Image (cartoon, rainbow, N blue to C red):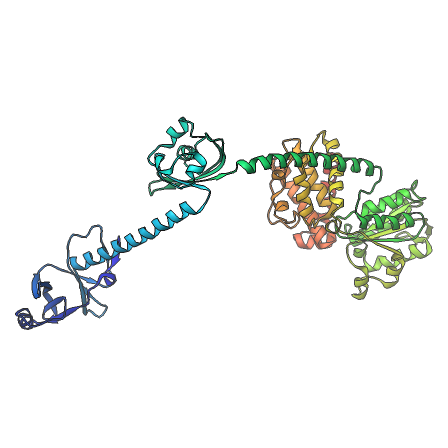
Amino acid sequence: MKKTVRALLNKRILKASEGEASRYTGGDCLDCDYVIVTENGKVSKIYDVYKSGNLKKFRIIGDFVLVKEEDVIDLESYSGETFVAINGKGEIVGVVSIKEIISFMNEYIKNLRNELDMVKTDLEAFMACSDDLACITDGSGSKVRISSSCEKIYGVKPESLIGKNVKDLEKNGMYFPSATRMVIEEKKPVTITQKTKTGRKLLVMATPVFDENGNIKRVVSISKDITDEEKLKAELNHTKELLQKYERELVALRAANTARSQIIYRSKAMEKLMETVNKIAMVESTVLIYGETGVGKEVLAKYIHSVSDRSEGPFVKINCGAIPETLLEAELFGYEKGAFTGARSEGKPGLFEVADGGTMLLDEISELPMSLQVKLLRVLQEKEFIRVGGIKTIKVDVRIIAASNKDLKELVKEGKFRQDLYYRLNVVPITIPPLRERTEDIPILAHHFLNKYNEKYGRSKQLTNEVIEAFLRYSWPGNVRELEHVIERLVVISEDNLITKKELPSELLNGESTYNAEGVYVAEIMPLKKASALVEYQLIKRAMEIGGSTYKAAEMLGVDQSTIIRKLKKYEALLDDGDMM
């Protein structure tokens, strides 16, 4: 233990010359503990003033050490020295001798005893106040303290177990296994289920207490009687297992029945939406589909096409935000030979020509450049257009379905979208609700995707009820697409056929979005080249979802737009071939 001189200092001192000191020590009454004799400004000796009966006596201290107030005294190595303290100005301010050291240690020991008494009182109160069994053993496993509930649980009085070793008690059948023994052997906390000779079942939590050398000096254990709880738990688990079995069979049956349709749903919101969709599918009206990223706008557009009178015709999709503006016009309307540098010598038909007699989905219509909005308006109004570099009008019979995750009406107000085109597209607007607003659809969608990827990868995985419950609590910012990706990942990486909650991504368990998670989530070991490709692809897709177009994605990732388009085509081709799985 170390203390500063200032903390131990006795300031009851009298500074005097040799002559004055002789007078004082000759019998003058002094109200001090030390007389410090100075000569020429230096300390020559010290008189220790002490009482003997009613008389004051003096003892000369010839050996002393000058120290500063802030100096430190090591009490463990103290050997009776006397210290004279000086302040920053060089003035004598007090003395520390063996008297002060003894006084301090006496006070310190008194405080320790008081604190020990308080701890003892608290410990006894703790040991007595709970029905749970509290036990403390030493580092060898011998019982030091045990609470009064011992008699109820073990059938013996607490005092009869004091000093007994847990290994002997375990060997004699008092209980099995011994959590304290396991803690001593493993040197770490242990939680076990224990059976006693009285037929009780206990949940025991034992924790080691280490000394400064890392040796166990105490083991503290708390045992809770769970005999009755275990019986109820067994009955409850049996009921839950039956319920989960019936629910899985029911959901699987619903999924099998619903699989006949291209759209998987069960919610009232989707049922109402599909009533509208089935009505408009049979007519030629232009449809504008709104919805967040991943809700299934393309799936709905394909459904409309498949049940319409145009189902025998082509279904063509183009993402208006994924193609550079300089190429988008040629992609949509085609071009004549020699229309621009690099053009095919024979020219090329545009996607509107390819979609003739069928349906064209213009995804991310909000990203269509203003210059091309005029040409699209003509297609909608007149059913005709002119190729890039051409002079001949081409007639087409195409039904237009547009999709957007942005409010076109707001873009019109901001001057970013033509008002006349907006009204031409907004004939029949449909909004697909996000997955978080139709949680009834989550179980049936989950089993639909489970069946899909079980078949794709030759697996026979099943989802437990706790996994479905976790799905229902999650907000799914990536909507149906995010759910599908999670199911695919679980089918691929889970070791057992029964997928449990512990195999879910941590961000999903914490209620956080896989799409918003910071950093990179590592689910399995794979070649570094493959991992790099997956990360790059997911970054590009995420940037596309946030920015809404390849222009914004390129800006966010700090690369050219052509790089984004090239890499997207490359990785999507690899995905189709299965080389990135």
